[in-house]
Image 1 (tube, rainbow, N blue to C red):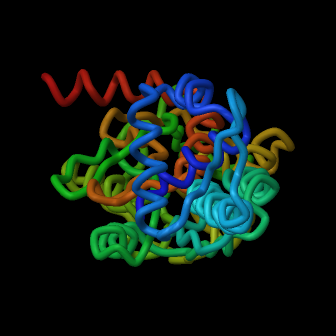
Image 2 (image 1 turned 180 degrees about the horizontal axis):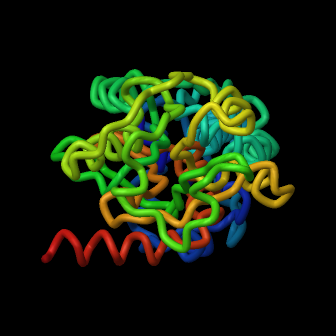
Length: 307
């Protein structure tokens, strides 16, 4: 039985007119008449009876009206439920620095709109995020990397994320007008764990320029890295968002070091074939709206891809 027949029946019953019902539904009258006839054939009863110019439901039609209303309402409710995704899971993988210093207020806002979604956020290294997005075990990944190009992955740049080389205020490099690779020779580094994209890019740069260095400590925690730097145990390359308060309070100092090869972007990644339901789309919108340089980042990525 076609659901359209039930809707036509209910509209005819409401209007008490085939002509008016057809106008409201956007059909020709003959189509509505044919639909009602098919329902009558299906049930083997008359559903409407005419009295002069007026018409009304038969007793059988009266009984079926309540049932048809329930069916149509249940169908509409099911569409609203699926479109809103008010229940279910949203699995996200991200790195520790973004989870600690960027994402919590956005996740809070998301749960205000979708309170019954089970939001699961997993702290992972970059390679694991990519792998789990590709296998469909993660709905979204939120990463810090150079512009991503992968045939299986759709990447949405949120914003350019500045990286800073920080030291304790008494470090000798704080007096330099510019810190280049020569000044970094022989330095002790406090680094993030293996698999961190910006650590790998920084160490590759140092190696290409023949810089010798010593890794004093390696941590998965940015708080531990900041503490070690503050106590003069070495210098560290970290996202600016992770040390913004320490820089403002002058507990740490940003050294004047920059290089184009350590230009990184916060990006949303998902599988190109991933179906983005309303909850996922809302999360993506919150993230992109929060990235003040999202459009600029996207344009820069597009230009770099074409060149």
